[in-house]
Image 1 (spheres, rainbow, N blue to C red):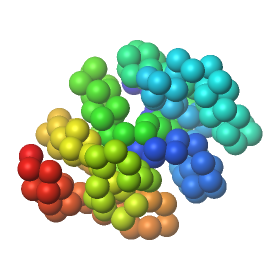
Image 2: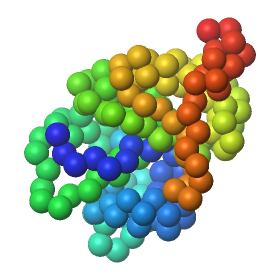
Image 3: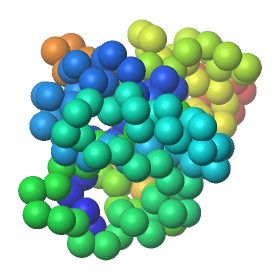
Image 4: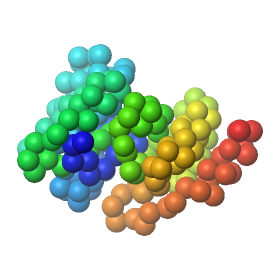
Length: 167
């Protein structure tokens, strides 16, 4: 598998927090955005690639293509930052055989059926289930909005969200 340094849920994908905090802190050399809708929209692909900082390569893949690309040997000195809009995407990667060890829940705003989860992270019922399934698969799921903040484990929030949604 390639050298993955961070798998992060952030519904804004590449934006200020990612560019000014996560990429430098993790010394990412490549970004892989995993999103089935963005990957097939060439305009959106151009936009997100343009947002990547100079010197950081950016790729946009569907979940299936990302699973394929992540399971091959990486290039020397590669440091991959994975970005997806929802935890459901990372759960699908795990189900496709990608052995993710950790997933960071970052910014995920309230929309649709999403309700507040932890800090600036909101989840809908499917995303709550995805987090639980990832944990059961041996993937640590935690919340950390920026590198300077402490890590928040999601155990209690997951129980509360399941009860709130009647899951």
